[in-house]
Amino acid sequence: TAGAAGAAGLALGAAGATGVYAAVAGPDSGSSPALSTVGSTEVVFHGKHQAGITTPLQSRGHLIAFDLAPGAGRKEAAALLRRWSATAAELMAGRAPAADTGVALDAGPSSLTVTFGFGPTFFDRTGLTARRPVELDPLPPFSSDALDPKRSEGDLWVQIGADDALVAFHALRALQKDAGSAARVRWQMNGFNRSPGATAGPMTARNLMGQVDGTNNPKPSEPDFDRRIFVPAGGAQPWMAGGSYAVVRRIRMLLDDWEQLPLKKQEQVIGRRKADGAPLTGGTETTDLDLDKFGPDGKLVIPDNAHARISAPEQNGGAAMLRRPFSFHDGIAADGTPDAGLLFICWQADPLRGFVPVQRKLDRGDALSPFIRHESSGLFAVPGGPDRGEYVGQRLLE
Ligand code: HEM
Image (cartoon, rainbow, N blue to C red; front, side, top):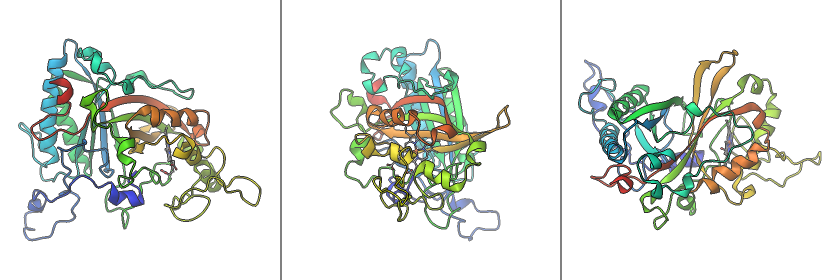
């Protein structure tokens, strides 16, 4: 999702060496240079927005949803968010929490981010119904949905990202242990993106269909970025100022079918070239799509039902979202097909001006629809970042 231009632009999290990583080379390598800066990169926990929204895509991700345990209410939820925030701040700084498992010893913070959100059901369970934002109203059903309720929604949602698999797993376990008797895991999903350093320079990621994916994301440098992605101060729910709404969809890719499609057809499905992500109307990856261009055959060069045409903000009254996904591969399904696809996560100030209108149009059948299946869904209110001394969600829960 961090596009070619966005790769640099999205690096909002302050990065700095912590010293932890440099100090842990092998026994006889005291003066050897560090292998890379991947481990030492640190993303800050405190700030206006939570980390993990505009942070560059990490190579590993875990998504976990929890439900509050029976009998747990606002008090227990507040204590849990306080514990979680303290643990996340420590881990993101590359420090081990008390009674640590040791799984991430030797590694630096590795761009770890931990992001917390509240699902629609959280508010009734904690007696906070009056403070539930209208933006959390359930997403409408879509005709192509094949949703598994057991892997959808949840009272609480945690997104973990890191550039090291052990660091990510370590954070997952620490946060799960913190939940204690207050909350139970409802579902968990594991994802990945390309490892830093795998390409010669920063590039937009590819998904498991092989497409360059994330090019036309809104960029933090654009004047309307904040308005589109983050909730402004002065809204109906002041505790959400600086926050954002995450739509999470586990989208299975029907890869056996997709891979049989000839390259030219694959490119028409999206409206972009597979090799470099450039629009079929020409130029480079960052050239604008020319949606009005006809070919010598009298047909639109970017077909009527191309995914990039149908999802473009100009076609949806300006609706825009920041897509920041992980790929997933959970082995081979019972029918022999790969259980693989996209953990689609998109961020917006209001789902009704982001995900919903776009998915409504895609649901009528864009060219990509026959090759994907939405298998689970979640909508979460992700509050603004905590100030120092504050925990995430304190403005709602205190
Ligand atoms: C663009 C793939 C699902 C919204 C794109 C592009 C690709 C792509 C390759 C073009 C490059 C880019 O600008 O990023 C996929 C795949 C999906 C999927 C493989 C499912 C597995 C969705 C869904 C939505 C969505 C569910 C929202 C409801 C968008 C938007 C753009 C886009 C807004 C940018 C359009 C533009 O401004 O040019 N997608 N997409 N996509 N997609 Fe998807």
